[in-house]
Image (cartoon, rainbow, N blue to C red; front, top):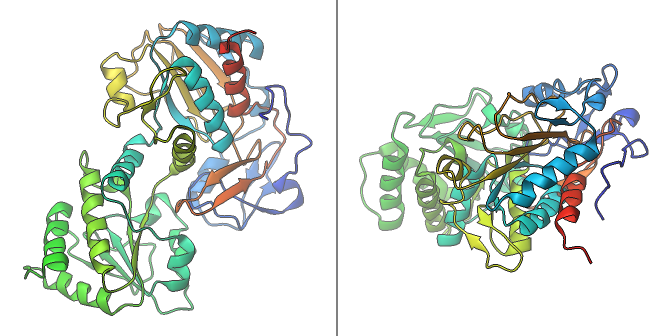
Length: 425
């Protein structure tokens, strides 16, 4: 059962209060070895953890959060009035879009039910990266690995065309066991400055698609290629006990990231004919993996699906892209969810399109011509408990509330709105 909007977290265990290990929700690595400490009224700090991303996220929370009121067209109001106005917007919308979707598993489940009552399309803030990964998995399949397997088994880690520490500061700490002999090679990019000094980089200025095409020809067809560094790396992979390929979907060349992922996965598959290798995709920020998984459980399709009770499901990763729907004027209302950070509304949103924002309490919205409802919501892992999928989708991590700010969860608000949409008995 979902929390009601009036539910508080005062009786829930607080990770900060007891100095218990806490799981960070602000990155899909879901580091669970963090100790929080109070830093003033409703402020938190992680003094023993060096992670700029975590520090920036915690700095967004303060004592003013608990007193943030809902708003209708920029004017403060009460929760009941905001819910009533939001329900009215959804009741007259013919093709609403549920975007952002930065929430946890419970929030995703409740939003799915609401979307089915409204006939809404579902897309995430990081929908492009998720859609690219989904497309490859649907079309060709994939060899995936996990954080634990990389840390315990891999003796060769290949990072392809990305800088993991840019978005995931503790990545190497999580996947490289310094007590083991592990080689780290960057392909198609410079070596990450946060990586071990012994790491190396090859072909840093080579265009990724050219590199993948030649590498695939060599690995799959045994063809000679004019890249001796890549030939030598191929032999190292064949001699390694276990190789992990690491890539970041959002860092691959747009708009054809799916083709690059497919090519890389084809290379991984070719190696698996004779040796062990797996791929680790660095993606899933802001609950993207959790929402994608929940949507798939509930519908049989991943994100970028339109759901409606009584109608066939419609999955289209191109048509139901947030910017495509908004630019073409195909969405007549937007429900925007951003519970982890104060994400701005999409730039492609028409000024006259009604918008409902379930957002981080520090969110500031611009003045708009269209009806705009804002409801501040709890951040999973800060103001409420919850669950998120880890970056490798092999673990669902429980989250513990770190403070007692009285904010409703996304699941609670979505459930209230869905109740208003249900036919009355």
